[in-house]
Image (cartoon, rainbow, N blue to C red; front, top):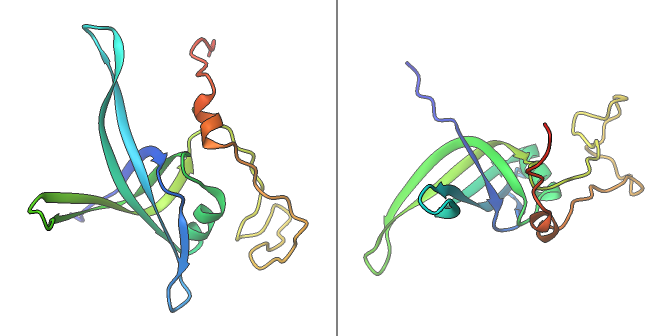
Length: 161
């Protein structure tokens, strides 16, 4: 039976994605992702923050270019990919384990933020025109709210649906 190592992790981007290119011209980006689970304490009936877990996310090729062009620190996303554990000992003798994910896909959560989409696809727009190599400087840019504005927006918990 083949091994299956597909993980889905949701959290907030902690560090703006950095786009780089390998010597062979392959696009690569990386960013940190923070995951903190909140739980309702039944004895106090108050929400409490759980342990904070950090992941280092890597992506390549078109996904890397799209992440770097579209996302910023503070955005809430879900990452799908292969999880790798890197265990090591620090100079002070402390044992540590880094959690790394090689992303297959990154999606934006719309639960606590809004975005405006611009249809710019490497496969072309809906009319079939190729946009990947376009130098059209009149094309509209994607508009995203600031992460602080998205976090400050009240949660609509009384929604009827």
